[in-house]
Image 1 (tube, each protein chain N blue to C red):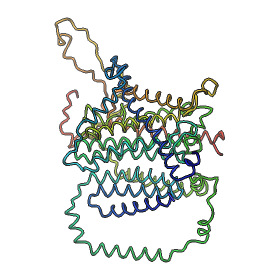
Image 2 (cartoon, rainbow over the protein chains, first blue to last red):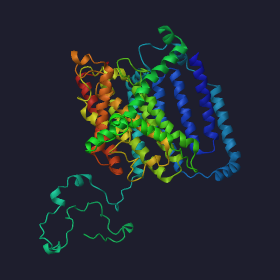
Image 3 (cartoon, helix red, strand yellow):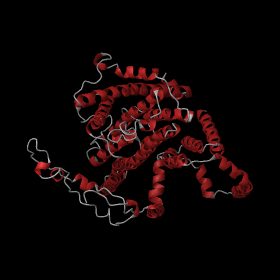
Image 4 (cartoon, helix red, strand yellow):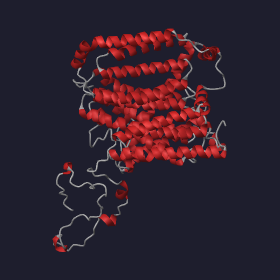
Length: 237
Length: 338
């Protein structure tokens, strides 16, 4: 009884929030409704007994993907007037594309036929001794381990590609070398002088200044004459 | 009576409700006294007295503070998004409470002893970012927003290495159930064989709960109060309570994963007389003391150093240790459930 009530509750909220995702005016609200939809989908997974999928849905989509969405949407300056103008201009094209997609989906779903073995699986009882975490692990890491590894490699190539495309080594910025910083000893930076009383620092041979020990980082000024570093007026050079 | 609570729908709902209350009320009192303990411990470390005026030894101080907070005016900035502005602190507080549903305080004493307990905790802790981002954005103030961005980036970064630490522990246990994780430490607590991971995990929890030396999101001396600049009164108190409840939660998690949960330090007579809950609470208190000790000892990290530590030190370290652990378990045939 309770399960049925909960199912209809979560399903109703899921559909409602999914509608709000596309219809709400504020894009930040849209993302928040999307998160609500993810949550209700996770709850439906829980009711179906797929607790691992439910948790992974929350961790991956809500905890990681939607955070990025939210970041991007919050940083964007969305002009609602502009958006509305766009709708008036493009609604015919949009409606056509939507209709074509809808017809295609309907055609696919109408001719959908489950494989006989899948039909058999649906009616077979859930094995009692195996939790669904173990069952999924067995399939992914034992039965299909090579396919799984291949998928991982493809993702890694994509990630490296993204890094290679966006990473640029700026020659002009001064990098910190944490190691040289932490390896500095007191004797290298601090100079002890015994001064005669009332004579000031000039008496002992010039003004006091910090000892110069830090070697210039090799890569920091490799490209001399870069425009954004105008005037190499560092006093101690 | 037993039949009513375990076999009827209403009974089960009622029982869960009572269990939740039995856990949350001590937890909230614990949060109140954690603020007191923090002030006392910091005071002792800085050769001061700390709160000592309200009640004997200042013990009523937390309640005086709470009353003061309640009396203040709730200010909602005029340009803010009202609904989300109020939702941020509520979300933070609720998530900090929600996670306790799966924590086993003794053998079999968990409100929900679910199969994927550790994943549930990880899911809940990864949601903590939302309270902060929503609060920072809804305040409609650039300082709050910058604070929220810093905070979110920090929490997301340290979650990655925390995840690898969790996987290392799970490899040694062979189950995602928190009760099983504690039971697997019957012979030796995981903080001994997995000591480097224990250290990484503890430091990551500091960053995850925005505690000193990683309290940049708050950074009261640089960016006033980060994402909750605009908050006052009860909405501010909820952030505060959430932060401290999260500290206790993370200490509980550290206890379960590395310090043997409710188990006695030695499986011998005089130690086993003391009930498991007491051991559990004692261990949490020790970890919490480390939290406070760190705050009194270390200066705040710079933001780029924080990011460097998370991505360039902890992530490779935990990854290598994960591979090493898996290799050792495989080589010596110690894999659980093999």
